[in-house]
Length: 253
Ligand SMILES: Nc1ncnc2c1ncn2[C@@H]1O[C@H](C[S@+](CC[C@H]([NH3+])C(=O)[O-])CC(=O)[O-])[C@@H](O)[C@H]1O
Ligand SMILES: O=C(O)C(=O)Cc1ccccc1
Image 1 (cartoon, helix red, strand yellow):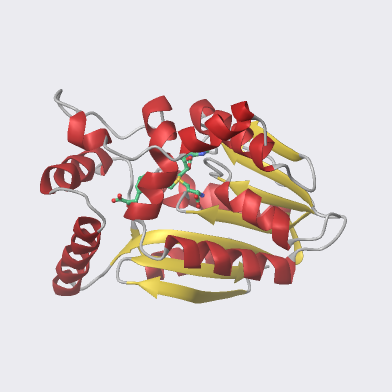
Image 2 (cartoon, protein in one colour):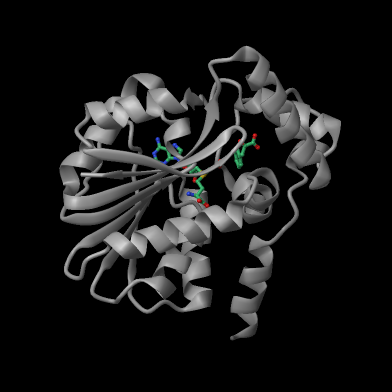
């Protein structure tokens, strides 16, 4: 690895102190360069069992991937999933990463370049609120991304994914979810914040991020997600992982 590539790899692993530092009033959470710089650390300290959910999603993706088709990762962020998938899945499957944040895709491109992949990875800047292309797909992954899509657009986004999948193709989804029972909801969120504390986030950091995400990350109930998937035409839907308010789903066309 060249010195430059090594530097880029290290750069991606900066510690997330975004909400520890900011003095100014909290704005809405955005995937800008500040977030992109610390994203890998942020996501691994903020999402319970992140590595295991990634591993399982890749394992299931491999079960459904077919040579001569496309695999799309919607909300690919810094390409963590695409890099794992590249090691798992045969080279006859073409990879496309979609994200609307140029700063995140820049990090993705750097990581892909530094890692060296078995196939070219097509990174596309696209806002899925505006429309996007899914074609001849055997696998689509949307890991922690549908939750950022405005509720009114979710059905259309999932319809586009369903239309672009081949028969027997699958969508892999990971979402933060809410519970219908407010008592459970409160407990699950408490335990989630305990998890963040164990991972080194302070009360202030937790509170500030919560505020920043308030109108940006809108979790649905598991049943709402399942119903939406069925409504747009998926024939079977199954939960493959759950930890309190995080849930992973596989849906087959
Ligand atoms: N409208 C949109 N159009 C396109 N992309 C969007 C949109 N809204 C948000 N994004 C993108 O969705 C990603 C969500 S992060 C995914 C993690 C990754 N999947 C992982 O498994 O490591 C999850 C998280 O931050 O909790 C970001 O990169 C946004 O730019
Ligand atoms: O931190 C949170 O509350 C989350 O739901 C996870 C997350 C991780 C990275 C960016 C935004 C949200």
